[in-house]
Length: 201
Ligand code: HEC
Image 1 (cartoon, rainbow, N blue to C red):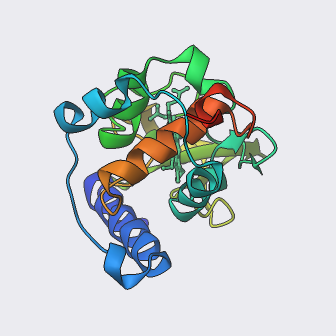
Image 2: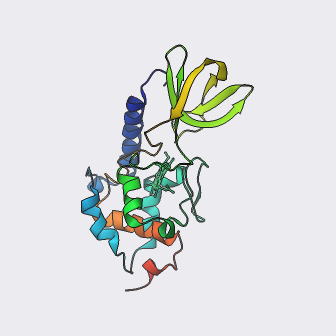
């Protein structure tokens, strides 16, 4: 991964994740839909009640949200992404949706990738996990934080926050509109099956 440009790496990660998500879905549900804010915002603006907790939870798992994000008792996350437990009260639906449709549009100021430009011209982007003996330990792909690269501090020419979110784009592309609504309802519930969205209609 050392010599890949950040854009190419982001692309490869996107492809890897879409493929993984696709494999997890039954055949009849395989679709690619580049959802836009305009299409989805109206259907999640007012969630109402009567949603399906089991389905929401299954979609959260299929999209691997929990491998990065902590979420109630559902997942502990990796510690490299924001805790989503109270995302329903902390963020508006538009911001939640945009985080998923265009992750790089607004990047959380606490969880981002850093791009290091080395004196030899190499460029390495990833999450800084630790600094040990003047070596920076970087995970280039957030989904596999155990795959790391070591950068000697002395080799660094410059570093800057990456403009590309560590969260892959396109996570909703294999979901139908109804599934997106169930996923948002699940996020809104904080994982609580007694939440308002799960009350009987
Ligand atoms: C590979 C790790 C990863 C995966 C998988 C992932 N995310 Fe994220 N997500 C992040 C990171 C890192 C951020 C913070 C950076 C940013 O704002 O883009 C983030 C930000 C967010 C935010 C904004 C939260 C905030 O406080 O700023 C939401 C909402 C979100 N993700 C939802 C989801 C959902 C829902 C899924 C599953 C469909 C998902 N994410 C999958 C890594 C991930």
